[in-house]
Image (cartoon, rainbow, N blue to C red; front, side, top):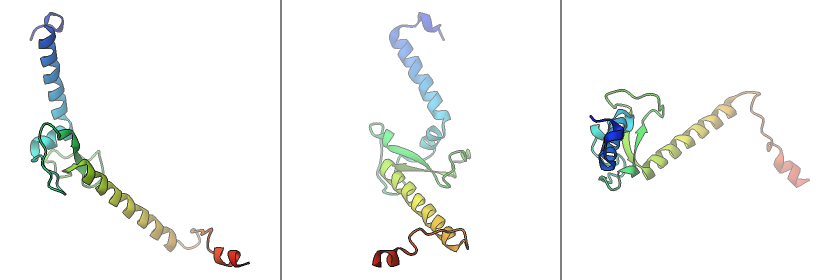
Length: 121
């Protein structure tokens, strides 16, 4: 390949595009897009090159550092389904925290425990 300084502007543009493509393919998103059909795993919306930026990679176990080469921790979701999936996960975490706090003897202070009697005074 010729030196970047000797390339025409259009050749530089093509070379840069190819480099960015190669870099993208190394990411887990690039790998997942090569591995799976471009369809949301929840709503089954189909994607093409025009709207591919709206298709995301969801980590099934919510650990973004867990990226096995076989893609077993990934699923492709559209932006809306991905947001919904994370909302459900956060709600579940919050419910579990509430249950833990309620079952914790002596450590779960409830500032509103006697509110009704205070309001009745």
